[in-house]
Length: 315
Image 1 (cartoon, rainbow, N blue to C red):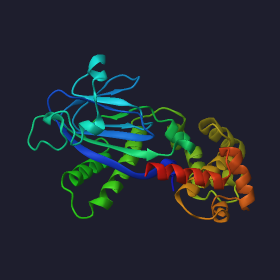
Image 2: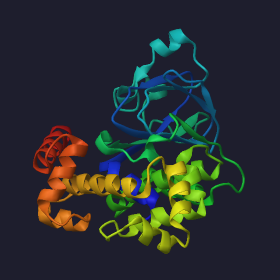
Image 3: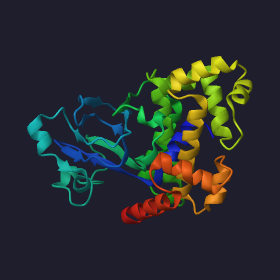
Image 4: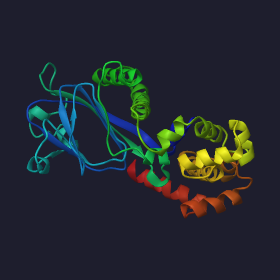
């Protein structure tokens, strides 16, 4: 797997959810902070996003916005003032059958002159977030421009159609399209000239090649010399470029990634510890358990039990 796929897989849990909202007139709705990432796509019309503690963001037809850290925010027909924001209707009531009036009732309009939104969210496990994900800004605004991000536009179009007319297989298609949308939004952010250590690391030939090698086979018997040979540079060059961009030396990063991958496997599978240890490059379950407790403050068994308990509570 590539670094971005691994970074997403490390935090993604459960199934994403989404709905298509049609509204007209004057409206204002609030989405509370949550343990996950949210997104909105404007399929028709214009509106405003007002993130907690952030500047208002105008959204036009075709615009997409990702809130990767679950920031609380308001959606409104205009750049609402503070009083209007305080009166904002909770999204769960506004977009459902309990809407305050027919103007804001979900699915109430066919042909109309209002706004149509695609809204959704992803559940994320923030106990071991990859720094690539942590570096994303509070709100990633991707304006609709002719010829920009064709994959993202195609995913938005397909998802909108699936949600408009549920057809056989939608239960499989929609979650898959939502996962694609998440990847495409992060890719698009990086393509827009995102600043930060990780966009730079993934475009630096030496660092990117080293990261690909480590992520492709984390269980391999890597050393600095072997990795430098794999990348085709000297060991000092590898250490300087990698550490300068990633913030950790290559073998330090590998240790962290192995333990993060172990945490993901403990969360998402029922594999025994001995199997997980081999998959992430530890010779024995004891060696993995010792390193894991040092990183996460809990033994693998306790970590798995606590994760399963949390997932059961939110199911």
